[in-house]
Image (tube, rainbow, N blue to C red; front, side, top):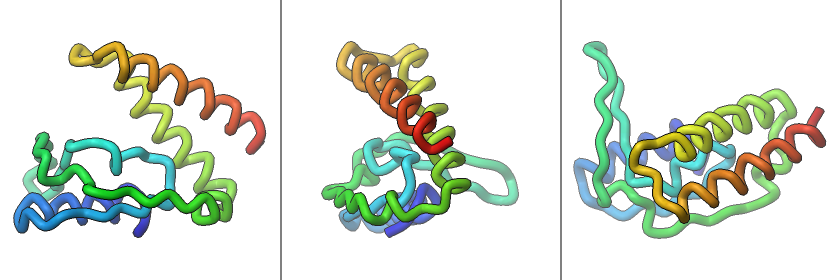
Length: 116
């Protein structure tokens, strides 16, 4: 339960323990939808992909995101926009991901306009 940092912690634990993740995101980052993990240490950040960190279940509760403070919502939406742009311009993009990312960009643009 939480934003990208909470889900990132769950992924780090799952990477070590292989326990399943049930994610309940409270921000728009989207890390609950990927098998990408990242661990930061004093030496730097290490990232990778492992299906063990892909959440088994994701529960979206609109109340959790609808009650976010406007500043956090705007910051979270811009973070999500950055991830969507990464998906559009990735050298590993596939047609489904590309179309989903374009749709997400349109939706976020509309939502940010309403938020302002």
